[in-house]
Image (cartoon, rainbow, N blue to C red):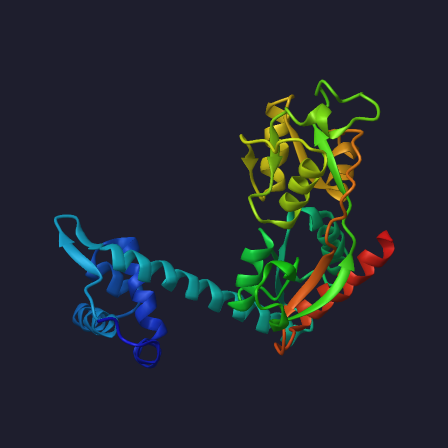
Length: 311
């Protein structure tokens, strides 16, 4: 039986995690011991203690040395994550002590990427030593990462959560949607398009149950048109643009900010199709009751400034 979390936390040490990572990298107990400044007997004892802590073997002996089993791969993956988090923690502490703000992790849904990049540019101009991690994903995934403490804040929508009361949410910006396509799309220069004109083209969309996808499905329903069956689903702006570049007949539903960015740089064109449904606004979301780091506060201020300048 796997020990309880409190038991694991009380018995596991950072140096043991370093040993696991070294074993994964070297496959040799002797080499791993040298890497973490242990004797071979000391490393052997430490490995036994780790496996006792988790209640199961983590490695198997082969003619190529020690190889992690399935549980071992799992533990090593999280050990690397802990090591990375500790490195980020140190980086943020150094930044705070220097008065540079340190580091901030922010999540963003695809449509709000242009707004976020504007805010990041403002922060970096004021604090050049600031480090920023950007995670682009769906609102559901971003909220889960906010819950886990892996993101300081997110630009997303709390309407997808069953527990929206867990978050502090600030209305950031309204979202207007647009249809974009390759500049060589057959309808690129058409005027006053209707949904039926583009319905049969291959659509690049968010996956099911996401707010933007639900809006598009509602548009098809209200127009009396069957929603397309063969879709290309992605949450990535880059994947969307790459698909449009490779396939001149594809169309994609994006925020008007993303559409303006794409058309300005010649990556795509905006089709003359007006959607009647209103999209939900972007929210600036943090975990309720969680203190904000200096870096997070700087980015929050910059996001609010950027959103005001766009209105």
